[in-house]
Length: 412
Image (tube, rainbow, N blue to C red; front, side, top):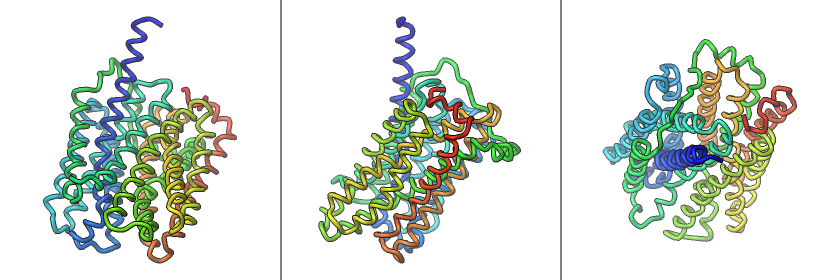
């Protein structure tokens, strides 16, 4: 290998690491309000029906922001570095602005929508940026990026157990501060890319063509099944653990245990799962890797209810396995769409996939929140297994189609 090649290879891995770190810090604002839900319920006098919208409003803003950005072709007009930094700083400002509403009201929910809209030009832009650096080994590279997203999403849970973050204001301000640091890294630390190849932009008049492309739609169905489970699991796992472990711990000890296990299951286990999923997809193929991951995560969604109020060790073990498997396939669906779509439809296909996927998360988050008091925590999580079941069926059908050869074990 020549010194020039070595230098280029080191440069792309340096870019991946710093983009992933910036993504990790930026995504800490996503669940910042959800992590302090009990405090906000008291402080803002929230009705139980409003609690799921602490997260669902971010999802709604993300979808609106992604569609607006794609329609206007913002990623084609603004350099990726500047766009990602602007989104990160916007998410930080809209999160810290929640402190201006000590008694709640409509304002905080509007700000959560704004936060989601800002993050819509952080995560997709980061994926696009990584794709430019990694024409090969893309499954592993995007898996590392998703791992950063996962740890970032879980950071507020560990912050709640820190001595300096016992108050909800400290958690929100801390998350906003981390996001701002992520923006600084994007602007001044991530290496430049010598050449950039941008995917074709989203076009509303191409939706019908995407919908008629059966292999692409099978990959989309896999992603939508995955998304039905993912964000509802991330949103409600801490509440499930809290209700399950009340007989075993009390007071600050209970909060510390739940915060720690939530961070392990969502963040640390999720990071390992994202790496394992990227490696498995590059080695064994996207369809096989996604089917394996969804089969395991769906099984954990069913099993965790059976551990409710049982031995904490079993509950925590199932939660960690669930955390590993629920995110392991996440990066592979969008990459599969880039491999299966016609070149002029890639941008539209990715936008449709993501927009519908995040809209589905609103439904699953709200449904679990609505049914938990009626069914009980020992039953309601089983609803999430429907998504990976249907997603696995879709990917199995894709696997047996001739177009699956385009995936080429994820190396294209």
